[in-house]
Length: 206
Image 1 (spheres, helix red, strand yellow):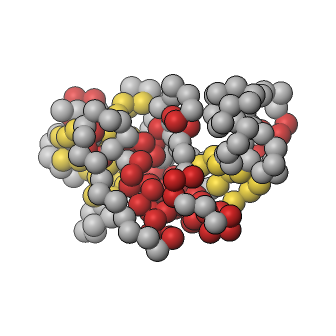
Image 2 (tube, one colour; image 1 turned 30 degrees about the vertical axis):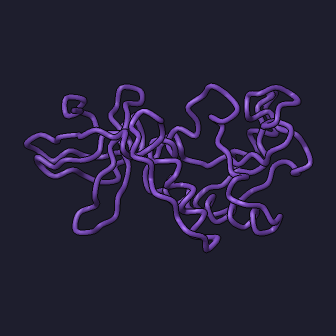
């Protein structure tokens, strides 16, 4: 609701139709109105002809983003069913502008994201591409090697909100560095669940 309120109240041209967080879907603009979200101009195929969905907590990451992304998946599947569209109608910002966006979803894997939508639609998942230079796949991840002491994991690059911890000498997937902080994808202790978060030490990036 804050995202929509800010979008409507500011004087910027940037706009989108819907914001999705880990609790709700909030509509800010009707779907028959163009948005300035794709970066391809007033009459571009992105700005003028697509539904624009903003996934919250993409900057901070962590569990709230994961849950928000899942909510977006469910909502996108709902829209596809409602309008009788196929998975080929799902695009990313990157398709219309030279911008690595949605960055966190791309880091985790775009085909992974589409497969989550396919699961909602009850259609067969597609193999995750193994090409490492195509961008946006888990195969792009490198190894993060923790040191001899526990390493706290945070939801933000300011390291203010702790969400987990890496054990001594634990290895995780190193996805990127944002604002000087490594973004890692690690396994939650005693489970098979994966979480993403930021760590302090850049020396572990391999």
